Length: 316
Ligand SMILES: Nc1ncnc2c1ncn2[C@@H]1O[C@H](COP(=O)(O)OP(=O)(O)O)[C@@H](O)[C@H]1O
Ligand SMILES: O=P(O)(O)OC[C@H]1O[C@](O)(COP(=O)(O)O)[C@@H](O)[C@@H]1O
Picture 1 (cartoon, protein in one colour):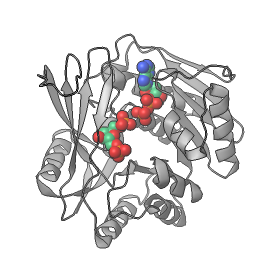
Picture 2 (cartoon, rainbow, N blue to C red):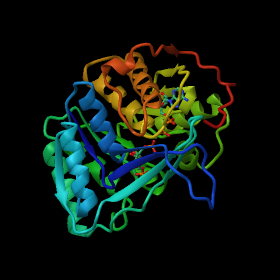
Picture 3 (cartoon, protein in one colour):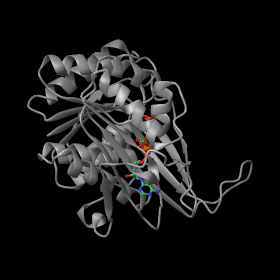
Picture 4 (cartoon, rainbow, N blue to C red):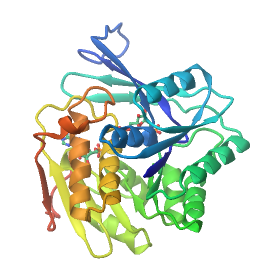
């Protein structure tokens, strides 16, 4: 079982437009609403594939109510922690060529007691879990080392922790040496403080993080797939898709597939390939819809132990 903590969940509203033009009145051709936030998406993806996950999230206000309704409709087990503020609503604008523009709100201000209650609920749900996953940005009021605290508390109980975050929250989590991190290319560049234009540069940065004590560094690279580095392994896996629809939540599905694979005892090759397949499948689906088993058919996944270090990582 996998427990996800999403300190800053959202109602995700995905709006499809012919073209995003600033300063104009634009008519949407389609709209989708999903429960969102990175850990919520990880739990949704695992549930959709028949796995066991529990989403822990702070819930308040009308958007919080909608979030719970959406999770219940998708049969995602959850532990809601009541908060005074209102959950955020994030908007994604999707254009026909697959370009995705995201407008993420900061989220509600959390009180110290609400942060504590969220950590307690996560630790309680985590008894016997294979992995605890801390995901996404931190809302105002949450301490920057919230994920660092999560890592320390889960480790004290003998559990394993994965972190998928960005900026100072990720840096503080890394200082507490989680068992796995899943930055995307941009998040890794920010973490190490330098540009990483090639696969070889990403490889070197991931190796440095492993040398600091992180067991698995898995970097998602958009259409270039993902690179997984441990103390004695280097793997690169990718999937080619012809019709990208929405990249919202692709990284979350990638992480979900990999953790689901690891939990089922797959080795790192097969777990990475599973993650890459889930991530690529997510890109073929509208909004932040997560893939079900039938969505994985026909997604060919490649994997090598000798990545081409010279590959230039173009913008996704
Ligand atoms: N254009 C694409 N073609 C194929 N796979 C993709 C594409 N974009 C994303 N993916 C898949 O989704 C995963 C996550 O994408 P990425 O953009 O790196 O994550 P994030 O959503 O965290 O920014 C990748 O590892 C890959 O498996
Ligand atoms: O916590 P953050 O970084 O603001 O991201 C939250 C957003 O990210 C998502 O989890 C999607 O993930 P990606 O942005 O990585 O595609 C949305 O569901 C949510 O709206």
